[in-house]
Length: 478
Image (cartoon, rainbow, N blue to C red; front, side, top):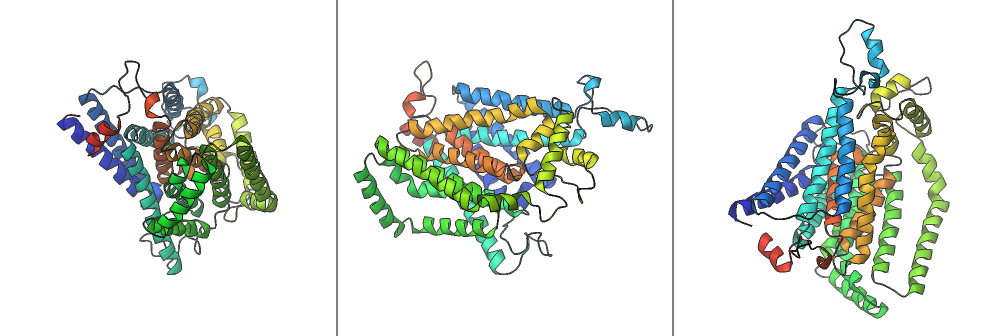
């Protein structure tokens, strides 16, 4: 890269890392005054990196899977934006509520959704998450930068865990500068308000740290070599890698002390999958591979048999709300059936719930406690399918990448298990709707997708490497 291009590139990368550090601090960026600057700065970083690529005249080959995923996600966001924009869609598509309001004599601008402002705000948030993925994908073409992104995520998650533990054991039970006790007093929440969201964030860092700790074991090509690497790893843990182990123990302690049921169950499944994939990467004999798969299935089945019923019952109970999640799910399905194609408007679940709730509910739910169902209510079924088609395609790419890579398998491995982690927790909570969690996960997925193929397969049709070689990488970063 030339001088100006290199400067833009370095500024974009530094800004991106700074945003990963900052995102969890102000209430997980789940306030308008926090997520709006976060979204704007992510957009600025993406513009800087695009300018760097343009000035350097670098040809970027976008894998078809990534291009298709981006198109599907863009179409879903575009529909969400249109839901809140008057005059662009047929009047017959407008939500029936606007016709009722018009009978009162009040001036209205009918739109598909219940709130144009909410639709536009939530579309901007989704665009910010897409920008975080794109930035991580572009930067992680360089191996050292991929590792730097992972190290940054682990570092900030470790700091969040340390703050949460200090707050907990000191008996402060506050969030940031607030004087009064927090909503989840007695549990570790860090700078987050909700303990379940904090658990997901901690668990993402735990997977990253675990991969960095155990990555050398993935290089084993035989049982004997694996045993040798395990012994060497223990020696390093007692020496140079001791700090990493302490950091992981702090994060693990913090996530347990969140008391999050969904967080624990999703982490348990993701952890078992991590171990299984990590073992299969060493290419064991078929008999050992089948034994490992069977053992993992038995462990998951045992976990569900012993605690699954109790955990599920507790998950479906809502201590802090009137009614239970099962009732919310049933009402959400009714709302979805009412407008299955058009939806009630992106970001308008709370308004839709208010209009449809009955005497079974003592309060108004602002979240469905199931991200997929909530989006189906808001966007309608077609747009919801498009919204999740993108991550599903990328998940398939990183899954394949775990076995295609001959080194650095930790990047697609973490992306794979992180997707399972957040995907499972999204069934019973709304962690992915927190900007800090979504941006961090998008960064992990972007790194995994960029590193899902080996250097040999990352070449353009002209033979020019779309991803830099080791020497080019060092020159670009150094």
